[in-house]
Length: 121
Image (cartoon, rainbow, N blue to C red):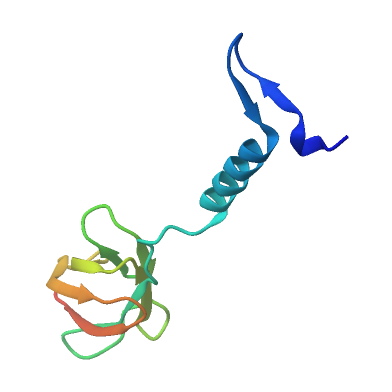
């Protein structure tokens, strides 16, 4: 006796072959495991944060928009911020300095956008 020839009963008058169920489950599994087609590689905003005198600022917060992802600048004032492709206003802040806004930074998939922030007291 073949397993695929045994019908499964779902109601009094309807049956559904195992083959159809297997095909449906296989398709569903592929759809759930496949990455979304709309997913794109992130881009990177890369740069440096300096004072008016040109000294690097360590520990500055660099954020993509008001509530987006954020990173801190390193000891040399450098940072790398990975974000989904879009256009952002990059906000740079540090205690003792005015927050700087770099408007309209366009981030493309897999590309690096270089920016710099000059912090004023």
